[in-house]
Length: 279
Image 1 (cartoon, one colour):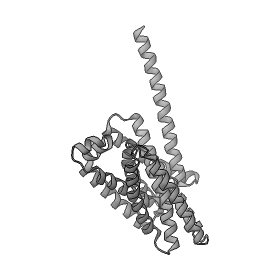
Image 2 (cartoon, rainbow, N blue to C red):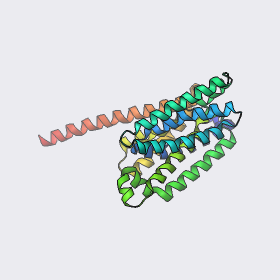
Image 3 (cartoon, one colour):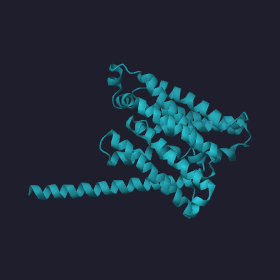
Image 4 (spheres, rainbow, N blue to C red):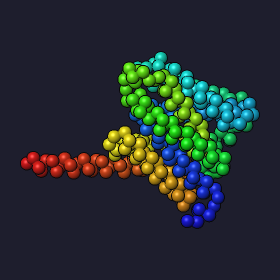
């Protein structure tokens, strides 16, 4: 309990709890829509926004937010143009974002390289009070949108053709979802890092899909897995003095391996049991 005597650790645990709900809620829709690479793409594109902020001497969070929202709009446009080959849009934006970031870093004579490295890996223990407040506002916004648009999002996620027939504005809903994902990534990057933010969005959803039955159960389980991974990762990071973002990601991967192993063992036991009953 010693860790809770530090103000920065209390902020870190509060931020981790908020992120443990935000990331899986978006992650489940990303995985089900087969857009797992969207988070990875926007996090790489965000590096261009961060580099632009340092290049024009402006708050990098603001420039990242602008760049990520524009990228989310372009991504949705390309996704519709290449509807059969949706991975093309992610490849174009990911490579373009990284290229722009490198050009801007070089144009800045390398002065921003060290600062950008902080955004690459993030640090949850250096989070400020204002960042915790922004995460809280984002969580409230996301939960409100989820409650209001749960059913239309559910229909669009599983069958866009049916959503069109029902008269739902699929294009705008998909665009709103991409923008919300981009905003969430922008807010979480200084904490989780551009290289790891997609992991905390996708891994809890991937784990929950292996054990949950039904969409609502998967959503609930993904949030529970998110809380377990984020909080236990933070405690482990404090105890063994390892980078928080990397530790949290490894905890999620460990949970994924454990769940897969248990599913495999349970599957074999059931097969043996069925075989014995039929003999």
